[in-house]
Image (tube, rainbow, N blue to C red):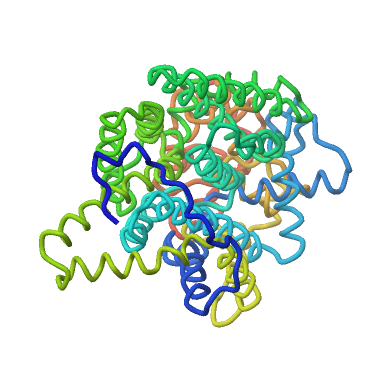
Length: 517
């Protein structure tokens, strides 16, 4: 199917009439859907462990278990000895509950399966959106490969997977919104659920605001009012959370904090010298071309949205999967146009013409959406066959062996360690142990975050800070400036080194002036 500038005004194309959305999937449909699941499962580090590369997953599990045990949401911090009992809110409480329930059913294995299935569902919806837009099925599969490759940089078993899923759904509903249609209003109850799962619901509000502005530029004032009204409805629905507007205030403060963006890795720009970075770079340039094409067609709403999410993805890796899902349909349509041009130039018997025919033939099956559901169910039922799911977080990321070997010492100490390792300790030892610092940078605040970084880097005043918080054990990389300083510090004893990790303990209090130096 070839789309030229002349018929571009019809983009996005309507779903062909008379085609059922639900059907009994064929074996090839099931295999293809299962392939997406397995690709997601192994796309990070070549094993299911890749989805557990961030121990914040464990923190969410323990938070959810605490809610289940107490029957109430926490309003005071139970996890740290550096800020014990201070006011703290579990903003993502519903995701915490879900993770805890899944964990109690099947351990980390089912956390990984849930996350992979959710991300696979996002990819399936993206594939359908590409074909529904009029893209050749083979072109859509090719672009989907880039979408997965780029998005894998933030494929983790954490609550943000629900934001990726819900925004993918929202993009689809908004692409094909028609005057008088009621489907987009389902985004309001979706937001009411979303706000309790993850703070990424703000991405929907930004999306609606950009689309409204774009509609005004197009002179589509009625559509601008429609999307503006939806924006107001979704904003109101986002107040359906235990904290009301305080959640929005917290998010605004969080997003305005430059020091958090500089400190937290996922808020930093993508690294292009990686496999996922190469995929992202390709999608970025293709997305910019698609935005220019949309603008030339007069579709300023979506041109501005692609540009906005492209800018956001350049600033933060956490936005890359969202940008990839958004630009996939217009990019796939451009690729399909190129295929059609080559097929027309080279004739009906050319390779390009045969590929175009194959893709067109399989497009109807892609538009049917039920294949993913039974495929995933079958995959889950057979998920033990020949596959070793993780029983713990990956040792390459966390000092699993060191913590297991010196469990008693570590549990009984006021331990200073990396924030990511603090998340893992919450998972392993809570409630027997509290930590100095974990991944909740917003909770600890700027001053304490700066103290944490100064300790990690062995900066001025590290002795005073350790003394201030009563730290009597340190576990860091052997290359850390602090561990190298402790090797020369009276009163500190090296307990063990293993896998480039050093564990120190305070064997005696330093003499009078030592802690004040």
